[in-house]
Amino acid sequence: MDVPEIRYARSGDVNIAYQIVGDGPFDLVLVLGAVSHLEVWWEVEERASFLRRLASFARVLVFDKRGTGLSDAVAGLPDLETRMDDVRAVMDAAGSLRAAVLGMSEGAPMTLLFAATYPERTAAIVIWGGLVTGRPTADTPWVSPPEERLAGAAQSERTWGTFEEGVRLVDRFTPSRSGDAEEARRWARWARYGASPGAAAALSRMNIEIDVRHVLPTIRVPTLIVHRTGDRAVDVRSGRLMAERIPGARFVELAGEDHYPVIDPEPFMSEVERFLSGLWQEGAWAEPEQDRVLATVLFTDIVGATQKAAELGDAQWRRLLEDHHGLVRRQLSRFRGRELDTAGDGFFASFDGPARAIRCASAITESVRELGLEVRAGLHTGECELIDGKVGGIAVHIGARVAAKAGAGEVLVSSTVKDLVAGSNIEFVARGEAELKGISGDWQLFAVKGHSH
Image (tube, rainbow, N blue to C red; front, side, top):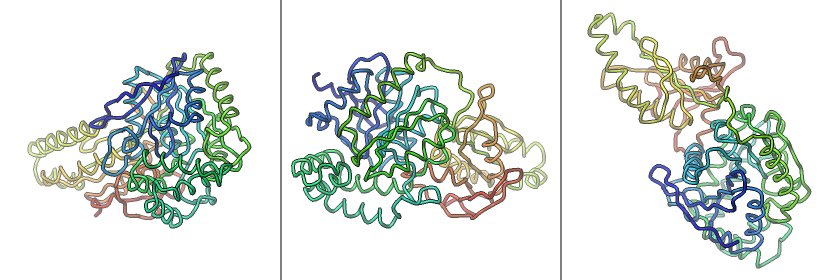
């Protein structure tokens, strides 16, 4: 097989480099690890044969994420939902309506979020050596402390692309080849071409903040998780946790320490081929009826509306409300929000990305001030029932209760929202634990910085 042509998909203002490998009966999107370079990948035979093996049973779409490889350089690094947009752009450009998605390593969190958010585009997911959270929690005590990870990112930035860094990458990702100078040189070249030192360090810092544990129970597509028992880069317990929390997930644990799947790939490939080809024969690529989806809900209302209405009188208040509604709807359109209900002076909307929802809420609180109004806003991300094209269920009630806790001009979010916007440059102020009326348990709430009372 010749090296496939490099193509470009347009995602917003950014060009995403991708290749189509093979012409199998179904589509498989390959989400590579931290950094990549589509041309350099094909220079090493075992990497090339890895793609050829995938292409023996699927039409493979592989891409360089924005800011890496042959894709456009960008300021900073994208959050998970921007990267989801890039996957959809690649799928659209390649004429793929529905695909399986294989997320490797750092590509796993985006893959998991994509499956939960866009089940209509996702036939199945496969996770290899997948990261679930970048920080130690009660669930994940094996994850290195943030300060240790930050020190590692700083060290990598200083030595990025050097032979020294190549040696470190071999020890971490392909320890079965530790001491192999040629392998270290290959890794150093891969690093240099894959990303700049600053971009690689920024990605490492962003991954510390990622936490997709709350997303796992909302994934409804067929899922295969494969992890090596002695994986040096991502502890096998991460894979086990995912398998426990994703409904119906199949978990396969393979022997070995290498994080990189191109080393002894056949056990992995056999599992993937058997899993996906079986689903294809069962008709999994036909679009199913969707009754649940992961969404971010936004509630807003005007602070002191009753008093303001009494001051202005009915006619003037009605005009002010019309102006308010017009401003809110312009921001919803700008940030791809769906207006679901308007009750009096409040709005209920949904979004397919939490960072867009936060930015919309922040823009609303700013823009209505020109009308002499203050609004409060609350957001939550969770699994929603789809009812006649609208979203409902407990996640919606949580969003409404979060909004009720917000102060004038404040955008308040649940911890789930905060955990999913790593890389967005949105900053938060902890508001502590709160009881939400009618909702069990205590909830950690956070105010968006710059929008606090």
